[in-house]
Amino acid sequence: MDKLVIHGPTKLKGEVTISGAKNAAVAILPAALLINGVCRIENLPNISDVKMYCKILQELGAKITWITENEIEIDTRDLSCTQAPLEMTSKFRASYYLLGVLLGRCGTAEVGLPGGCNLGARPIDQHIKAFEALGAKVDIAQGKITAKAKKLVGTSIYMDIVSVGATINAVLAAVLADGTTTIDNAAKEPHIVDLANFLNTMGADIRGAGTDVIKINGVKELRGNATYSVVPDQIEAGTFMLAAVASRGNILIKNCIPEHLDCITAKILEIGGTVEDYGDSIRVSMNKRPNKATVKTLPYPGFPTDLQPQMGVVLATADGTSTLHESIWESRFQYTFELNKMGAKITAQGKSAVFEGVKELTGSPVYATDLRAGAALIIAGTIANGETQLYNIEHIDRGYENIEEKFRNLGANIQRVTEQIEM
Ligand code: UD1
Image (cartoon, rainbow, N blue to C red; front, side):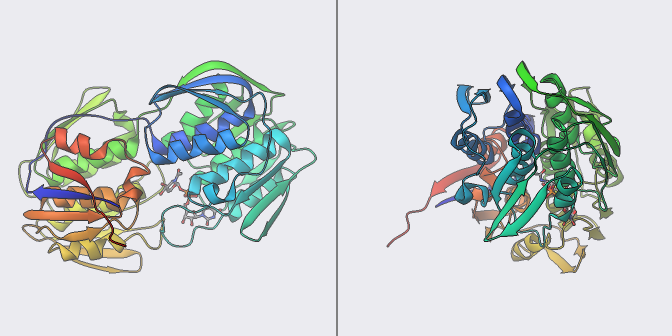
């Protein structure tokens, strides 16, 4: 069992290079199964969710060649199976994209009910609604979702709520459907645009990704025979932006797309930080205690829920009382109990948390309650006085490439330690 041991406080300074986006990669990898041919994917983050997805694709009959640790070639000409291995798919959320993909390519799909971070109820009614609208029959029984269709036919789908996953699954199922599909009230996150760009590069006809109306003209087949590079990770870039602010540091964040980060930049300016935009990199610095703020998470282009815990660390030591409103996930404040162990004064109730800013945090044993909470606690350990031991870091390894090395390069005193469990 690995843990991270962090000694603080450190003002983080230097450069960091952002990896490919986790949430784009875990949509693009299954999307490759829609291709009847070979494709190359570059700038894949070297994280455990990507490795797990590659194993699942291999189980389904795809041939994968690793060119480097961030680049693969996938040959999907001979798919042999439409049943995704249950013990693997039930471990992470994005496995449900296999439903849209296998339904689109083979007309039948069987996937374990998805796992992933425990952020509260994570219904999939909008995914099912989209599949049914396209002509599929969907059943849930014995921990599995089964979808079948003789033929998928393009249609109009109105999403009752803005859902990243349901938008992606509807796109995946519609790419090879007969005729045109329109998705209204679609999610607009950068990784939805990236998925559409990947599929269009491979031969699909998808228009409007990045707006709330996406139109998919079904094509007969995707031939592949092309190379695609995954977009830089908006959430990883935002994590380092907020790490710079929380630690009163100065970080040049390279290989990012500044417009994906506009709402984070706006909040950083509001609380007294500085952000310089260099086109494909940004420098974030802070030389005082942050001002208090009110932050509400929203679908893109609003403040991302996946940066809410990292923002929470900033507000924990801000000057005054701040409020965070979480509007996407009902259980996303579990990290606040860990921060309180470090001396923060946070009261979380329902969808809001009130942060009474303290001058400093103190190191403590803490637990990563989910992926982004884990990243937030690394930042907290970096700014806290003394030693922090961070447990359950397998959550962090799901979504951040070389995280402790990246923090170490910025001056953090952070080590990965393997604890022997005595039997
Ligand atoms: C994705 C991201 C996750 C991020 C979230 C919100 C991936 C792999 N994960 O998750 O990191 O936190 O977007 O930006 O990209 N909902 C329903 N019915 C549905 C689907 C969703 O009610 O059928 C609700 C959810 O409970 C939630 C909201 O819609 O309250 C948004 O969820 P959604 O955008 O679907 O999140 P994910 O795609 O699971």
